[in-house]
Image (cartoon, rainbow, N blue to C red; front, side, top):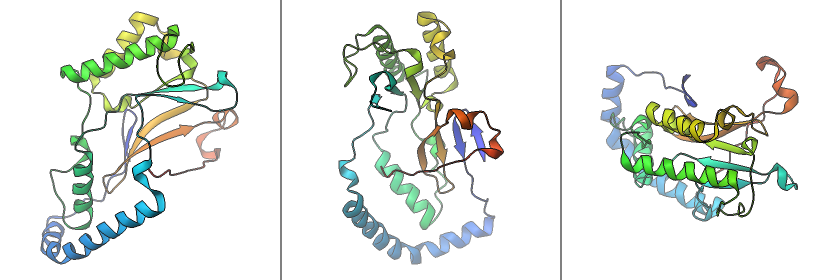
Length: 230
């Protein structure tokens, strides 16, 4: 496993040169079966899970963790959804089942870059949303008229910012609100991260750490792993 900030990668075993040649030769024979299984799997997925009605993640999302309003948290999502995501996902499926496409890699997926004016604008808008949550002027769903503490504000998707952009975010937070904005311990103790599987899929992931478990060494902790279809 490789880790870069909060981006974890499970890598495939590297194939030898002749393995790639064999994959290319087998590709024409795999194609018909892949086409049938691809559309059959999509139809079964739509019937069983109806993913078309799953709401898209909002950039600012209020989450209720209990019946008490003071336990609500707000997740600020810095990960932007590329407009070509569906095409990219299909190409990854082809890579995994028919033949390797060397130009398809999650490392080429959209990131927020400091040198891109549009990306800077998006980050600045999210920073303004954070300011509004702190001073009680937010107009986001469920946040109107409410003032949130730093312990309730969670930042998600920072691994999708390049190094300069990530530094810019913390510089702006420090300049406006001081170190309390990023040193305050979040409640509950959760950590957002991204896991890239060996087949090239990126999974939005979160680790929720209970108070009792947090005190234990990693070897003694209990883990409950849940996958939610999106």
